[in-house]
Length: 455
Image (tube, rainbow, N blue to C red; front, top):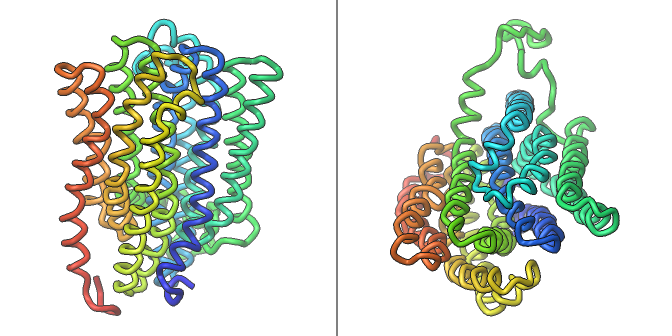
C-alpha cells in the first residue's frame, strides 16, 4: 500500500482519519472555551492561559511521538520491524517519565506557573483550578500523543482516529454534564478534559497490545542484549536511539514549545487591555486552530507516506506526495480563510457575548484568516524534513512561525500600534514563515537522487 498506491489517494486515505481526529480534538478544546466562557470573561481568560500549559505538555508528546514515528516509518520501509519496536518502546518509556515529572513539578509550582503563563489577578484563581486537573492528566496526554503519532507513521490512522474521536466526544459530554448540569464551573471543564485524555490514551494503546501494529511495546526491545536478544539487560540502554528520537522530534518540541511561549507573550502583551483582550485572543487561537486543522490533517497523512517511501528509496513518490499535499491544503485553507474573514464577528460571538471581546476578537480573526493561506507552505515543508530525518532544517523551520518571527513582531508592534499590533502579529509571522520555507523545500527536492539510489 505505502509504495504502490497512487500518492494522492494514499495521502487522502491516511489524511482523512487524521483530519477527523484533529478536528474533533480541536472541537472539544473549543467546547471547553464555549462552556467556560458562559461563566464569565475571567473564566474564559483562564482557558487561554491554561491553553499554553497544554501546549507545553503536548510539545513533549509530539517530540517523542514524531521522533519515534519518523524513525519507525523509515525502518518499516526498510523491513526492520525489530528496530521499529525498540524505537516505539523507548519513546513510550521516556514520554511517561517526562509526563510524571511535569505533573509533580507543575503541581508544586502551580501558582507561579500560572503567573508565568500570563494570568491576571482576576484570572489566576480560575486558571489554577483548571490547570490542577490538566497537570494530573499530563502523563496520559504525553502518552496519547506518542501512540497517536506512531500509529499514523505505521499507516494505522484509523486506529488513531478512533482513540482521539472517542476522547473528544467524551470531553464534550463531560463539559455539558459537569458544567451545565452539576454546576462544577471551571473545575468541571478540567475534570472532563483530564478524564477524556486518560480514556483516549487507553484506547490508543489497544492496537499495540492486540497485535495490530508492527512495532510492539516491550521492555526487551528497550534493554536488549545484542549477544542474547531474548535477555533484558538494564545496563545496555541504547542512548543513541534516544538521541535520534529527540533530534528528529525536536522540531515538534520547538514548534509546540514556541507556541506556548508565544501564547505567554501574547497574554502579557494583552494584559494592559484587560481580561477581555486575553479572552478574545484565546478564542481566536482556538478558532484558527480549528480552521487550520482542516489542512493539518491532510499534512499528517503525508508524513507516513514521505517517511516510508524515503526509507524505501522511492524519492519520486515523496515529491509527488508533497506536491499533492501542499496544493490540496492551500485550497482547503484558502476556503477556510474566506469563511473566517467573512463571519469573524459571528464566530467570536458564539463563544463570548461581550462587546469588548467581540471587537478585539473580530479584528484578530480577520487578520489571521488572511494569513491562513501561507500556513500550508510552512507546515508541509516542516513535515517533509521531519519525516525524512532532516532534523536541523525541520527544527529551524518549526521555530519560524511562533518564535523567530512572531515574538519579535509582537514585541515591536505592540508599542506603536497598540492593540492593533497585537491583533495582526501572528498574521505577519505566518506570511514571513511561508516565504522563508520555500527556498529550503525547493533545494531539498532538487537534491533527490534517482529512485533506488542511496540518499
